[in-house]
Every structure is written in structure tokens, then in C-alpha cells.
Length: 469
Image (tube, rainbow, N blue to C red; front, side):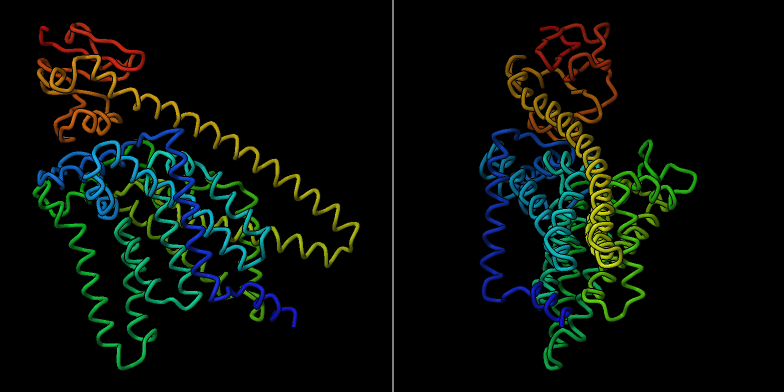
């Protein structure tokens, strides 16, 4: 009876669910739009997506430099380029930040399904304070959108919206290549079991066609922009200092590198929760618990295997399993507290739960402090990039800066400089040679006055040219 009541309480009302999700989505986008008042500058990868969207609009795509190609962001930045530089940038940041907020909502939702609202709050907080999530998504990276799409697919599947779930998984496959496997397997399952027998052949044909479109979306633009079908893969295989791929055992390093991302009690509580689900076959929510654990494990193993092949294996590529671990850990903390209450009695359980709460509060506070410091660093970076257009105007405008080429800057600033100067990313180098012009952060070593003596200075940027003006 109690189990049935719990399941009923956590089953969404079909009539209200679509309206509730629409309101939640609108709220996420609204908050994301308001966030532009605080900062409206992207970081490295998003700046490249903005450049590529603009280049596609003008029929001049070049992908020979910059990060690996991702199709989904370009589906936003290309049409948004019609709005001009500022409009395009704002649209993408609203999408990226809105996706990050939606991911938090969906973390809450999935943990709520398992153990109620307290577990939901813990899961959302876990993702929010996980190392790098708030900063990366605030500056326009796509990890928040990826989690929102993946968890949206899980939620859609749970409420019987199988075609929507497949569509959302296809969207994740346009962001991360490892999601091809999940989208493909779900498409096969949908064709084999998710539709009536009379529609299976047509569904399989549609799923196969969609798969071909996904592959083409990854490969064809690269062929057009760089002349190489697999340029994205070769770019991703370039060694990055400090990444798991450069470790002696990349597979293991992928796990150890990701370990500090979440507060450690979440890992312990998540393990306890999954083990308990394995042991109790009659437990409510057991299937969902084991499914989430299996997905997290599979993605961790896939990314670790990719690290063995030479892909970086950084924790940013593990955002989905990190978020899933937070969900299971939040649910586990609630279940542990409930077990203590039922086994120890009211007073001893109250003391134990209070001690557990204090420990969790301290650990979460430390993680929140780390997140605050990361966000502050991101804000300083954003302010620096926001000052770049006015700095270019102070230096005489883009035409004057480009009069003495090539353009040089530091590695992390290549996309921002190319975006501000309206040139291809490949037109900006990180290896300064005379003649040329350096556009760099103030104090950067790359602006050597012995080779680039003509200098224009602002508070944050240096323009140094070897050409006389």
C-alpha cells in the first residue's frame, strides 16, 4: 500500500504536465535572458560557433582552426547571425544558459521521482556546485544543454512520450559523438518494441534516415570548411596538457580526474543507494535507479576508452554521468536518513540525521565556495572580452588593426579576437612573426616591444604592430 502510494504520488498528471514543462522552460529562458544584464560574453568554443554561424550565413565557412565541430550549436548561431553580432551572441547565450537551468530542473525532477523533493533539491545543488558547471554554462558552453536534452529524453520516456524521447536523444547526438550509441540503440528499440508491428518497418526506416542526417551533420560541414571529413576527430585527438589522455593510464585517469568534481558524500550515498536497489527487487523506483546508474557507468567507460584512444577525457565531457551521480547521491542521502529514522528510533535518529546534515552542509559549502571563485574568474574573463570591441575602436578600428597582418594573440583568445575582428579563426595565429600585429591581454608576453614596437594600450588589451603608423 505504501509503495503504491509513493508511486502514485510521483506519477505526473498527464493533463498538467505539458503546461508545467512549458512554464518551466519559459522561466529558464526568461532567467537566462535576464542574465545578459550581468554578462553577455562567450568563451572559446562558443565564440567559434558564433564565427561559424556567421560564416555559413555568408557562404564562407572555414573550420581549419578552432575547436571540434558541433552541429547543434550551429543550428542556433547560423540563423541568429541574421540579427547581427550582438543579437547572435545574445541568442546563443540565452539558449546555453536556459539549457543549464533546465538541466537543474530536470535533475530535481528525476531525483524527486526516486525519493521526493529533498532529494530533488540535493541533486540540483550537486550539479550546480559541481566543478566548472556554473562557469562553463554561464559563458556559453553546451554542457548544460546536453544534460537538459538527455534528461528530457529520460523524462519523456518515463511518461510514455517515446518519439519525443528519441528526438531529444538525436539532439544530444548532435552535441557529443558518444551519444550516437544511445540514440541509435533507442531508435532500434523504438522500431522493434515501441510502436505497433504495422509501423515497425517505417519507424526503422525513419530512424535510419535520421542517423544518416546526424552523421552528415558532423562530417559534411567539416569537408566544406576544412577539406577533411574527420577534421573534428583529428582536432579532438590533439594532446592537451594535464588531460587524462596524457596520463600513463588514460582510462584510470579519466575516473580519478573526475573524482573531485562532486562533494564526496554524494558518491558514497549513491553507491549505497544503488547497492540497496540491486538487493531489493520489490523496491519502488528500482528500475529507474538501476537505469540511471547503468547510463552513468556506460558513459564514464565510453569516455575513458576514448581517452585511451587519445581524446582528452576531461571532466567537462562527463557532465551527464556527473549529474546522474548527483541524482543518485541526493536520493541516497534521503534514503539513508529515512533508514536511520526507522531503525534507531526518534531521538537517536534525530542526532544521527543532524550530524549527517551538518557534514553535508559543510561539504556543500566548500563546493559552493569553489564554484563562487570559478564564477568570479569567469566574470573577470567576460569583462575582458566585453572590452575588446571598444579597445579595437580605440586602436583605430578593425580595418586599421588588420592593415598589418598576420594577427597574433594568445591561444585561449584566438576565437574572441577573430570574432571581434570579423575574420576567420585561421587568420589569427599564436606564433608571432614579423611583420604583423599582436592583439593580446595587457601584460601578455606575446606582445614583445622589440619586435612589435608600435603600441596602443587600453586597461585590458594591448595592440602592438611591427608596421609603422
